[in-house]
Image (tube, rainbow, N blue to C red; front, side):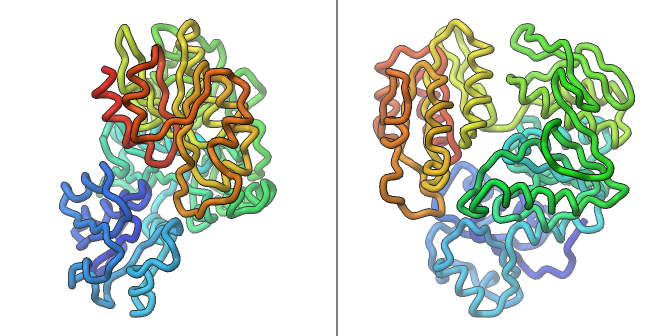
Length: 450
């Protein structure tokens, strides 16, 4: 599983979760690695601690001489601005410049590939699958879209395995560079309309991804999704799927359920992650586990020992006075699932949520849906929109969302005063929600509120 003959690799946008996984892969292979990112984060600090130099100035002079050579392979994320000085230096010089997805496609070529796609659920599901394979002793290499709590990493490497688990990203049609033997699709809700224009174009792209699965491959599909492959296994909860979860109950904060699968019946499976959507994710992982010939005990113990992914319903504080949960939810459906899961677990407690909208276009396209999801909270606090790769759009603001919401306890609070503001509130369950830089609040809030 090696791309041979590389002189050095430079990553533009190295602090991205997917980019950093590939950077770690090449670093582990002994290839010189360096990179640029706009701001220092906990993830870039960790990369630097592992021996990867990161620069934060868009200036060619900041790059070490080794990485200025024409033999350096350059990997970039489409999220970076096209006028970036470093990016254009490499293009003008004639270096090989490739998107992250193209490099990921090359890395996984020639391996038995398990690719997990979906507008939500793909990070948890791919991480579950990787954990089942690793904990069973079967082993795998994995490139994930989040930091797994079990391994504190977004990449797993195993020189003795020819199996690759990869999170397949629909953004910018990146997943079409992959050639999966097993494809999992967890959801196809409308998203990335700044790229696709309309939902049907996104659905067409998912079908193109599924078409890349060979005839002897398998599509593992959440029941009800309109995708076609000759060898499809559907999964669902209390429905007519091929693999179905029944008798779902919550005991001591754990979801327990029975499963009738392709091979056997499982009684009393336990997944320690909250929410019915994580039962669906567990079903997808179970199916892949069976396809990979894992035993019932391997699957049962693997699901039980999976500790989740950082920023996916991550409990930061959990004591008699306060439960604080941090979650990456940035789409209306993800917000709805997260908040409903919290309400199911804490039905008698007041739920306060802080939400940072991500992208002006997404906020515009789903404004009423965002408002509806946020209205599930008892108290909502909005931050300013995180722009990511976009410029501001006239009239698209957090104030616009606030006006659409109907709950009485709603406000907009600046990040600079958030900690002091929350110390004055009566909190029982607190959520931080969003995919921007809201995660920078987690440690300060933990320190102030614990």
